[in-house]
Length: 307
Image 1 (cartoon, rainbow, N blue to C red):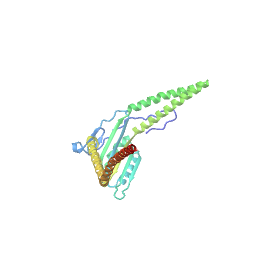
Image 2: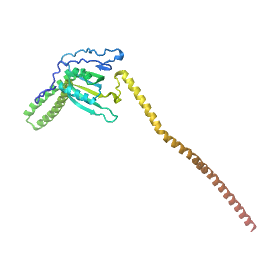
Image 3: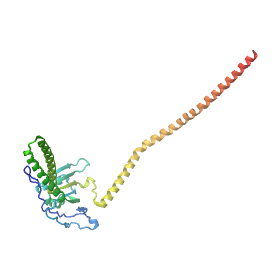
Image 4: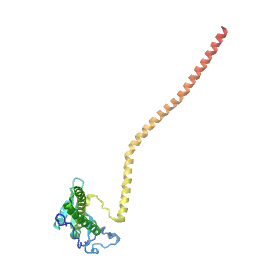
C-alpha cells in the first residue's frame, strides 16, 4: 500500500521483497508462461517451483480463474469475505441468480495483497471445482525507477522556480516564472499520479474470478495453442450454423420470388413482342400512305392532261 505523504513529498512505495506465490496446479492451469495439463503428462497437484524475485524488484501479479460451483452466489460471497479478511477488497462484483432455465453465475474482480495471493489461489478449490487458472507477472522495476528519477528531477526544478518566484522583482520575470512553475507543477502531479497507480498495482494483485454452475451450459476454453485451435473450430462451426439458419430463413422468400418470376416472365415477353410488332405495323401503314399519295399524284397528273 502507498502511505499518505505531506505536500511536496514524493510518494514512493518500498517494493522490497515481493514473494512469488507458489500455486497448487490442477489440469489446465497456467502459471507464468508454463501450461500444466494432466492430459499432456504434466505434474498435477504438486507445488510449482518458481524462482523468487531479487530484492527491490517491483512485480505486478494478475490472473483469472474459472470455478464450477453448485451455488455460485454463495461461493462468490464466501470468496469475497476471505479476500477482505486477508486485507484485500472486491473491486467489482456481479451476481446473477437462477431464473427459469437460466443458471446462476457470479463474477468478481479481486484486489489482493501480493503476499497473500498464493493463499487465495490455494483456497479457490474450497469454493468450487477449479476449471482454469492463469497467473501472470510483469516486472515494472525499470518503469518505477524511471518515474522516481523524473519525479525527483522535476521536484528540484519546482523548488528552484519557487525560490525564483519569491525573489523576482520585475513583473515580466514574475509572470514568466509563474507560467513555468505551473507547467512544471502539473507535470509533477501527473508523474506522482502515475507512480501511485503503479505502486498500487504492485502492492495489490488483481484476480478475476468467474463462477458458474455445472448445468449452465457454458464451455470454458483452455488457454494456449490447443485452446486457440478449439476456439477457431468453434467459431467456424458457429459461422456454418449461422449460414444454414440464414439459408433456411431465406427459403420462403426464394420460393415466393420464384412464383412471381414464373408469372411475370410470360407477361414481360408478351409486352416485348407487342412492342416489337408495333414498329412493323407503323411501317406498313406509312408505306401504304406513301403508295396512296403516289397514286393520288398520278391521278392528279392525268386529270391535268385531260384538261
